[in-house]
Length: 229
Image (cartoon, one colour):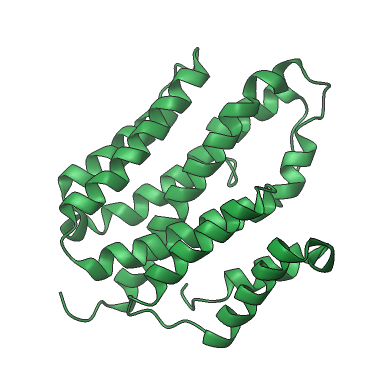
């Protein structure tokens, strides 16, 4: 395809980020949903704090409903799925209708008025997003497009894994995936910040006492490696 315009690069990158944001937070939410219903009221506050989202909720059940489906809540999974779809739709020529169809089906789940079986619905969204990435590999011919999307995907996954306190081995694995994609793209990235990020992740893995309390700094470096939007 040759050089990718700044506008398309931006859409590709944020498509990767928003899609991954929905996928990873859904997987986490899927595991805690049942526990949250029977947990003491306010148990969601720790989740909000880790994700750095406003605690605007009044009960566990209200959090579950509004965080998943809130159309006027900018932090809801519905809102993030909508942003992913908005980025995808302007890339229809690069993605193909086969790829777009899975984004549409995932969004349709959130836009449905019937949420009687939320766990079943959440699993279907997870399945559609996995199918989306499978179709990206199969139908998106341009390697640069795939690599840019996956850079966004792995940056978002790292961000969420750090915030949600995933095991350091998982963080290290996703960082290796990011490096593999980043070096293959046309995107500008800050090599000095990338090296600093590598050092901080190494410290988190091998010297946890030294890295304690530095997650905010780590996330800042991660969020500023690539200069888009």
